[in-house]
Length: 477
Image (cartoon, rainbow, N blue to C red):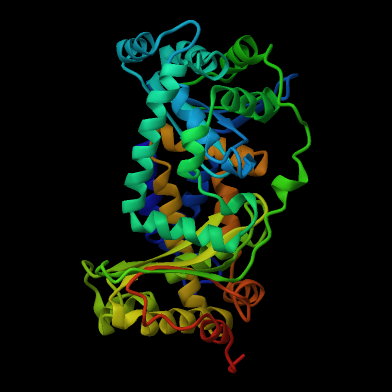
């Protein structure tokens, strides 16, 4: 896998699409073609839907190791105000023993296999996965099915894990980037499921009971919302047999159609400000509503996100930075760091920038960001777009390094798109983006739209929301 990725990277260094302003000599045209050949020749992702509704998706690279996991179409978005935090709580409890295995037995079995078992919860997904030798895939899937279906959920274990989660919440509160993004969601999706945090409020964590956990699993877990994903040394037909064997008799969830209260996550332009002058630097995020995973505008927004890029003061470059915003930050000392982001959900998203700056630079940095956004909407060039497309493709391909990254890509895309987009198709969709495309999506999502802002720290110098909203258009347009 690493060899293939190095080949892709070397090709991308010289590859340019038909919209490039630079003419490619004949000696390099064969190299450009080899990128398409390399992407087309990647192992195919095979997908099968079982009678139970469960989907099995895998990519067999013939490796000696494999990653297999269960991607579940359920996360904190599927909670209510009363049980917010239960999805993450259940993720913790899955490793605390089953009717068949004690926690110690489970840990020893995984250790003796030389495998790794892990899980995470997001706003829309819960994931349990195992990394192991290819020969141990059947055992790994059996363990995954056991912890999903037969978790003991003992009262003593629940109480112990309650304390662990409360300590985890305290750690998250010290990570100001996490705090800002939670505030950003609370402001952008206020009064809806996406506005809640993944961990939930401490009040809920202290009160979640075994009945709450059992009810959540019964309501939201079931084969129709499961994707069994595998990558590396995996045999697709074997995965089908294992899925049918271990999950075929499982029933649920309680509802087939997702309720409207879950889907209704409206966006609201607004701000949340937590002034704390004891914090040395201001941590600020500003965003607009972006596109959902499956919307056609998502790819152009990814390119626009790459155009803005990221920067921190440990980097050099100065006037040689390709990004105009990074160049301004380096020359004028506007911030300590900034990072653009494009956070997607099924039906909505947040597209924006998170930055850290000194108290006196808040206004200048924000003004510079908005000027760069207006530039995207009105004056971005083909040269800049071509550079951003190449950076985006390189980053995407290099991220698919190893069986775990590929398995994650398969599982996530199956839940978001109901298929896995082949790399050569993804490359073609990125290549189809032009400067005009960027300007069009800029006008659609950014220009004269209400932003959402979350700010923590010494933010006295941060402009009033109405002033920020007033800078979301340009008379040049």
